[in-house]
Length: 281
Image (cartoon, rainbow, N blue to C red; front, side, top):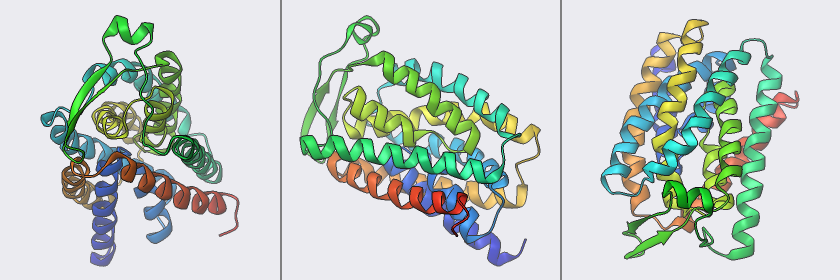
């Protein structure tokens, strides 16, 4: 590994960590494509470095969101039961899947999430639609509130359709384990669109969850030799710095702005990765 490679990996991780914390993605959804396309890192090694960095992203950014009481801890722990199981499943089957198929699966998951979020925002003109707690949310007290400094008001919200979001969280875990990402590209849209959680709270809760999800699948990656120290070290360092900055910025940004940025990033990366997986690039 050359100094130029290490510096480039650090810059990639810095930007990925920033966007990951800002949007609740964990950073892997941005980092994996960049490592593959810019540094020509095999996707299995890129996923291995990313999954370790995702743990760092969660540790740093989640502390900022929890301190400001934006994270919905109860909802996060409820959904994480499904996501962790899915992460172990995904990481276990990742070894036998070819690189092209991994890229296509990755791309489709990103494009699906982008379309769902765009459709919801187009119909409502806002980042979320207020709903009451469903029966599961009532039993588990999943509804919550937080002070939105960008709006200057306290936002109260319920959690609807909890069970479909729980099922989707399992799928998010599988995608996380397969691709070395935090699964936020699936979990954030599920919480926001299906369960009607405000965008900022969905981002904060996703950041809280991804560390646990990533830790479960990281062990499988390490055991199978997909964590190269020369790639992982600068990636983790860059991610730590970027995620702290991203979390600080996210607190001051309006939810609808976060959602628009989220959709654009998912579309760009999804189209690029799909073309690559199909052999068009």
